[in-house]
Length: 130
Image (cartoon, rainbow, N blue to C red; front, side, top):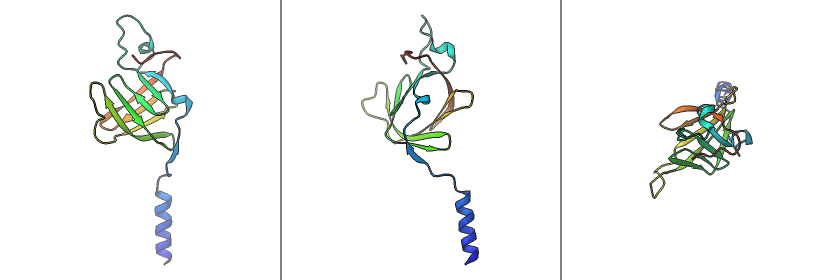
């Protein structure tokens, strides 16, 4: 019996902290771009790389990832998304995972299933995604 209790205690201690349902922090909301220059609306500037984070979605140039419930585990906010692709009449099948984290350097790290992690800088207030 003592061995079972010890095993259970070790298993619980090694388990990651449980995620909590939360809202995204205000520091994550807004428009982001890969580099500060990408925030400027200049003739010929490619704005396709901008991302807009709202309390319930992450919008990319050609897709919107809608998340009904965000969970927080440590510094990471993650959720299952309904993905609407530009030009499609219905959301993509499944509910892929998306995760956001503010890095110590102030960049927003975005991880999506089947997509390499990306990091973005905050654009000034009033910057549009498109």
